[in-house]
Image (tube, rainbow, N blue to C red):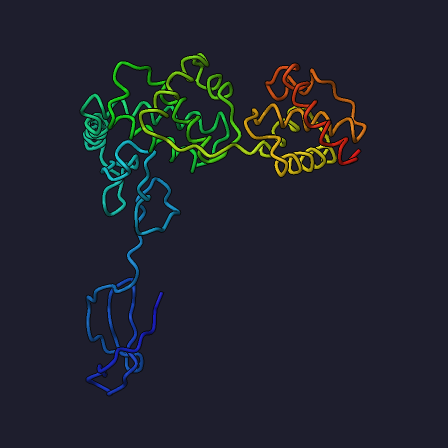
Length: 307
């Protein structure tokens, strides 16, 4: 393939023509009129595309960005899985076995201390829970940051890695206002709820975390999805909670409990048949709590004649 390029200040010594042509395959520069070869080997000034990942279609010139979710922040050198040299030619069988041994030892030496191995295992567990609990990258990044802070305070020694990982994830969900309960995270990582709660209280106290007040409206979609409620009931429950927030009724109440009570009252208003037991199972809140929260919300609704 020939590529025409005008070279400034350079003309053909034979005919004086100024249009030079570059051949990318042979690296020759020659005159476009008489064909005189001026230079046989010229340097390629085009983009130097190179893939730093296993994906050959990726033409990015840089590697992956740094991230707290990787134990080495993504800055360490990684020997790729492709058995090719720098020119793209396949390696010989003897060189393949040498590279395989180097790849193994490179992976082992990245975590040479016990703290690095601990962090590596913890971040691997977070990565597993990301898909299991359908969490976003921002939540995992925040959880990794909290875990690293806990390691700096030496809160990890003598405690379960799984328990601390679950506590950091729960703290991250609270901080980012992601509707995940303590039971959800404890069940996802297969740790007792009591152990997760103990670790959460520890990091909350020692790291002096500031947690925002949970908005009960965020729990409506979750409960309604599990209980298979209609969109009409969800919107009615949102209106009830918004009015209750303005009157200060939701202050100091369990967000899931008040959301479940609003959904139950919304079902009564829209004529949708759902028992307190159905809402209780979907929200993880007892029926007694739902009845108690309904009492306050019902008084507010009756006073404003919203039904």
